[in-house]
Structure formats: structure tokens, C-alpha cells
Length: 82
Image (cartoon, rainbow, N blue to C red; front, side, top):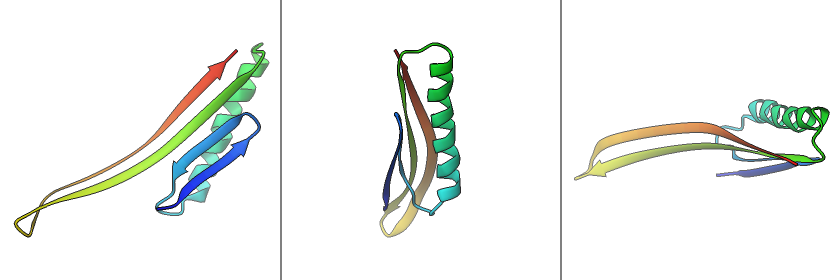
């Protein structure tokens, strides 16, 4: 598990990069930066944004046999405007 944090002015991206998808993380970083810039252009005194990328996989085993598997991934973005 690799924890990745990159600061961009007032925007920050935090995520878990299991598959080394730096290209997708770069796009998410660009989107977060664009949100902050749009808020400033709209007249905000200040703005900051955080994006969190997460992926999880689980496997349930009972009596030595796989009972279920589950995989999930998601991106969450938060924008504060002052």
C-alpha cells in the first residue's frame, strides 16, 4: 500500500495508489486545482479543495473456501470557499 500526497497551492490530493495510476491521479489533481481557481474567479476571497481516492478489496473465507469477494473504488472531492 502506497500513500500519496501532493500539495498544489491551496489544493491537496490524498489517495491510495495500488495500481500505480499516476496519470489518473494527475487528472484528479488538475480537476481539484481547477475548482479552486474557479472559486477565486467567481469572487471568493480564498478557497481550498481536497480530493481523496480510495480502493479496497476484501475476500471472505469460511472453512477454507472463498465465501465472497468485494471490490470498491471512489473519488471524493471537498471544496471550501470563503
